[in-house]
Image (cartoon, rainbow, N blue to C red; front, side):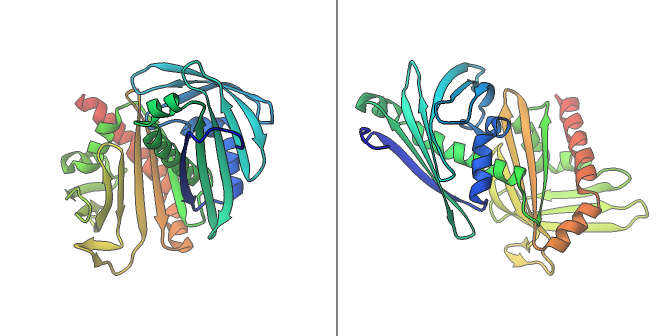
Length: 298
């Protein structure tokens, strides 16, 4: 981006994905529509001509329902560098995306350059945060489109607000009503919802056998994300046999929830065993039960 004034917001992020997967997430209009924009934004793409000189026309819908029409032109495209010029009545900027292999994954650098000092100053309060949120959404989408050999993913659009889905995962009284697909049942749930707090799910099989599933919370983002693992049982005490880390993501899109559950296993064998246990079917049934429960309580 030579000969441009230095009114640039720059951020960089390492991703576990290969560079080709990141390029795919940018070049495919169906995929980029899932992650483009800050949290809570959805996209309707009308034109996407991914070649130098090609137009990109889309409407972005914000969390408040407002629609923002966007016109951009792809100026340069290569596996290592993509340059997009955004032509807007309010803001004009050039976005440079750099992709390079690094440490078994990829380093993405995001340089967003505005044309005037005034525009740069006006965007300073929110653009850095928004750009980080865009990369957060990209990171999640990369896990969905190309999970590694130890990962299982469930993606659903739920017709209930994200805050209620989060509640369904953290309220013991709700958990026992939806968590287990029949004929199994959940008979007890404990949730100390904080980083380092412990959780416990007790399930019972049709023949009366109880299964205790303890864990610890690693990350809590209110209403948006829960990361937990069974590698610890309580107070950072290691478990005898870790099985997986669970990464739950709830994105509110106008009262609906884009729900993504990522189960990252310690071994390929654990992942395959989980799949044979019926991960996709069982978790799908449980998710339907959670959605129905939330609607019944509304």
